[in-house]
Amino acid sequence: MDFRVASLCFALFVLASAEPVKYIDCGSQGESYAVNVTFSSAVESQTSKAVVHGVIAGVPIPFPIPDEDGCKSGIVCPIQKEKSYSYVNQLPVKHEYPSIKLVVEWELKDDSGKDLFCIEFPVQITS
Ligand SMILES: *[C@@H]1O[C@H](CO)[C@@H](O)[C@H](O)[C@H]1NC(C)=O
Image 1: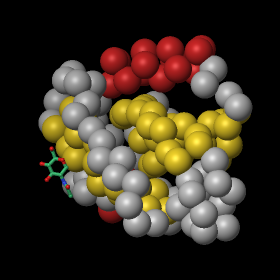
Image 2 (image 1 turned 90 degrees about the vertical axis):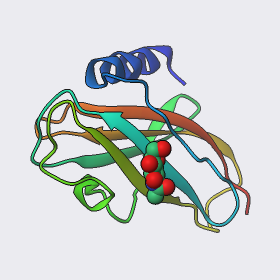
Image 3 (image 1 turned 30 degrees about the horizontal axis):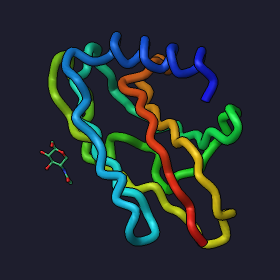
Image 4 (image 1 turned 90 degrees about the horizontal axis):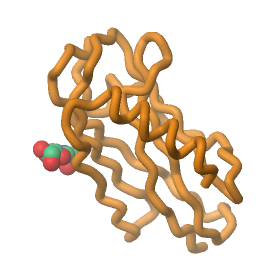
């Protein structure tokens, strides 16, 4: 993981959240990772869009998820300021993926493309 990306992520996260993120069930059983991120928004936003990357050897590679609309993932939009939300989604892990360890970087972006939250967690893919 590139340190600069990590610190940027962290900085954005601190800006975006009034309270610490209580996350994540990285339960590795089954074929998907359950993600539940509780965050408190510092901004108002009509929309929210998830952007997921798998970081392999320090390089973030786009990781497609079935539904990138955060407003359909447990969040009631429009997002209001200083309200707490739980973002709930699944990271599908397909059998055809190579068997590797990687870090998943999961961001949720507001109307202006700024992070509502940004989290990272390790994933072990076994095929
Ligand atoms: C997600 O986490 C929040 C806070 O811990 C909890 O209230 C909520 O029920 C969880 N949602 C799911 C679907 O697990």
